[in-house]
Image (tube, one colour):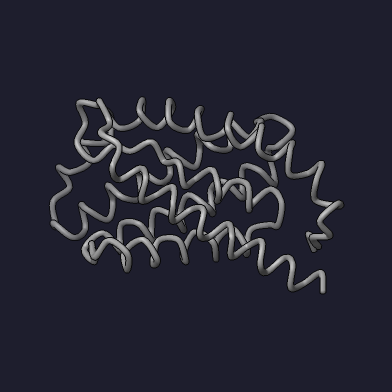
Length: 174
């Protein structure tokens, strides 16, 4: 029964990540940098990483990316979204596992945001076969710091609340 609850909770996390991605796609971001986003769905991935672990966070990130592409019809963005999710999840896991004594969830989130942008610029560079695309990275990095800070701060508050209530709802974290 506990495993079913965990799976249902993970399914809810995927749907919340999808909902946040869709909502975010309608928010006009007042950045000078085209394509910059707030990364609201990364809150869900970071929470999943903390509460369940790497494998589940990776699955949630991949499923959220695929569901977003299926719901919006933006097939060309699939490779960017998937690779961004996978790479940022790997980096966040590494930082969270080995450096959580140094970095809070805010730091973990900032590393994830930077990794997400670096991977997307790298993919764009490979697809276009033009390394000049990397000139887009320096303006993106300060945006990563701001959005990563917001996502990390939000994740701290949500994580505190969920950890208090996890035992009440009988979710198995293992």
